[in-house]
Length: 131
Image (spheres, one colour):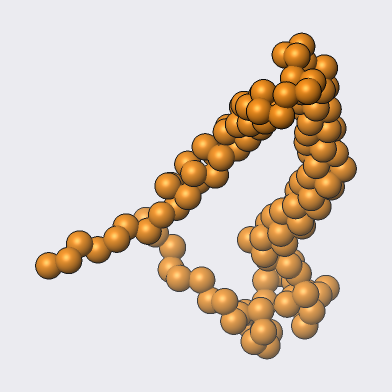
């Protein structure tokens, strides 16, 4: 059996003496100050969501971004060390140095270019066909 609908404005209406319960006799007109359990749960949920959001923002700023910067630094350092310490005998040959430089630049930037292309492909709006 379902209960009747909740009267949301009942806490704001004055309580008649005949409608008071025996347990309310010591708190006659301040009954509207007692928070509803549903309202308390919503307030606690909002507070919990704010705490989780703040911890998440802190984690992002203090842990994730510095870790990504650390990894990116060592990746770039490794790339530069590989390029500068290669043994391809490019000294004195501009063409050979340009070819090896192009190869290394392509090898290091191609994954990023493919990632950018993939993101654009996923987010591309469909073009309507002419009729």
